Image (cartoon, rainbow, N blue to C red):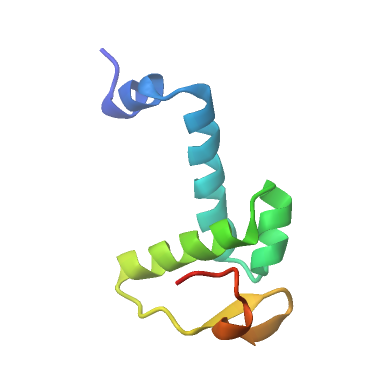
Length: 86
C-alpha cells in the first residue's frame, strides 16, 4: 500500500508537481543570502511571486512582515514599488 506522500503526489498533475517543486525551492533559497531577483531569475518566476511566498512563509512562522522589501541588491521602500501589492 502506498504511503500518504506517494498518494498525494500521484494525485497531482504534471504542472502542479512543477509548481510545488518551484515553491519548495523558493523556500529553500530564501534561507540563503540571495535577493528576490536572483531567486526569481534562477527559477524563472516573477519577483512578485518570490516576495509573496516570502510573506506567506513569515506569516506562518508568526513573524511580522516588514514594510521594506529586499529587492535587487538594495533596500527599497514598499511605496516606491507600485507593482507590489500588499
